[in-house]
Amino acid sequence: MTHLPKPMLILTLAVAFFPTFHTQFIRDVPWKGPWDFLNTIQWYDKNPDLSSKNPWVFKHFDEIQLQSCLKFRKEPGWIENASMIAVNFQPANTPNLDGCPDNVLRQYNTSVDAYIKDGISYKDSLHLFVHWLAIGDSNLRSIADQYLERTNNKPAWDLGQLKFQDYTETPVPYDVGGIMHMPCDETTQCRPKDRNKMFSVGNNMLTFSDIRLINMAYGCHWTCGVDDYQRCYQPNRGLPNPRDCSKCLCPDGFEGPECTDRRKALGSNGECGSTLTATYKMQTLKINLPKPASEGKPNVCIYHIQAPPGKQVVVLLDKFNNEGPSATASSDQACIKHCMESYVEVQTERFDLAGPRYCCRYAHLNNKIGELKSKNGLIIIKVNSYRENTHAEVRFKLE
Ligand SMILES: [Zn+2]
Image (cartoon, rainbow, N blue to C red; front, side, top):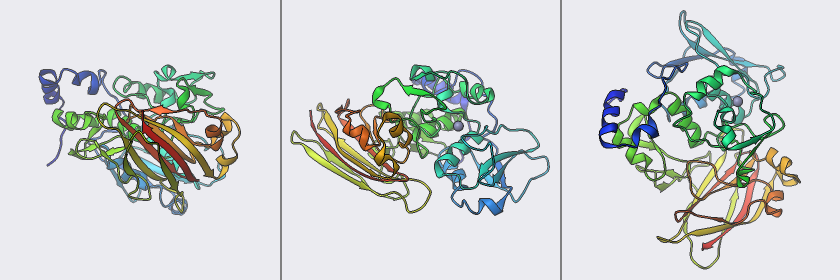
């Protein structure tokens, strides 16, 4: 069965049976995005000599396609009068290709060069791929100032991007911890207003909030029915998967038909993690997660720490020892710089948004993040090893 967009039907049902639906899911301004999700987005590899040295890069198309209404198809070359993404790999020493270059907007009847550099990291290439879909940096969204202190108010990237992103402002929650959020460094000069999230900015893989950004920017949420939204949205704010509306796109810590089961496999390493129950006696969760053997998706494990009904869990990081550059970080800035290499994230309430993160021994020893407490009887611990091995101990008990 195919799932065609049925906005009028959904709107009618929504108004009749689900009064909060409109404010949650329907954008209130017309969308003018660059790619049409009803048509397949064609792409071709303009420089196979270099792309073959970065074999994991084109898997990004599959990863995005499996979790959105966008469809991609590889073509052998440019097709006359088609609108295509020409993935154009450049040598590693090409100037002006650092950071995140401009997004690619659709230009009718032409192929648009999407420049990418030989030797680019998994993290940076994924960020770039999402830009090719004309999704801008999250830190440049107009609501960013509600969440960030900034000393640099100049928009770093082109205004077309900003304008497009603004169409998605109303329904998409702001997350400092997605891959589309630039790190708070010398360029962006930002700092989360929530001090517990000082080390939670940016990511090294697509998170649920990035997937949600793509889905809502492209109106993918119009392809499933109201019942699918209700099932996936309560209580953990998932979305139905437009590929198969009977399934959900869940926040990273969850999976299952209602986004309430613990996610067993999220990273390169397959199934791991566990569900633990807190008692009044202190327990210790020992974490040892090595980095992947080669450049690519990080290894990730998800732990749930749950309390009996009406009770709350408190957690405290007891040890944090990375093996890699962040091990020697000795200031906030130095630590922030390495926060993408490996981290332990603790979610206490909003499981669709990044929680406080431990990413350096320095931050742990200086008690930058103290004891954390659940709001609804569940703590989610997300461990991520990208270019460093993570060793940590988390103590937990009932409040
Ligand atoms: Zn960017």
